[in-house]
Length: 167
Image 1 (tube, rainbow, N blue to C red):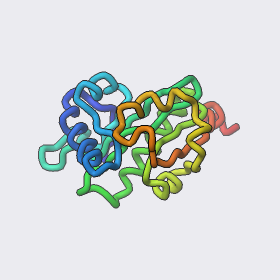
Image 2: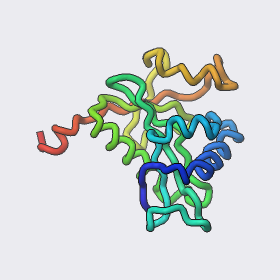
Image 3: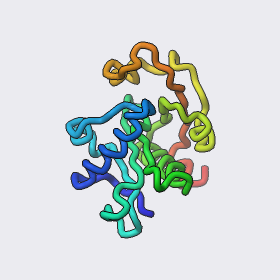
Image 4: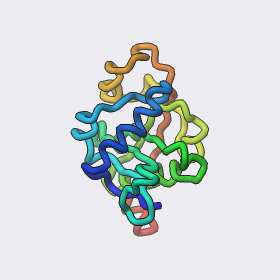
């Protein structure tokens, strides 16, 4: 499997995968317009050729949305039902964390129902009230607003210089 930045040709597959989980109440739905406007934030998991095969389609999707100079959010993280349990979600989160590190971010957060999964990815639970107000700008569109029952998780990042120089 290959993880790469999303392309325009991926939009329909991304939207289908995200909205499949949204219909189950597990994440916010995304419109094609919303995905177009934020396409640069998204990465996809595809077959070994790096392209979307007609047989398998998009195997995974996830976005790294920068909220502020020191904080980004992993959002719309979804793995195709036929690929669940193969470690693709963990690989995709690691990819997004590396992307955040390369951008110089200090922290990455997510709002999730999958606390155990994010715990295995090195995130810790935090009180939602400790997060900056910018985090909540998309929540106004959520059917669960203002009674959100998602769990806030956060991961502190190691600066790239320290990782690459061994410091």
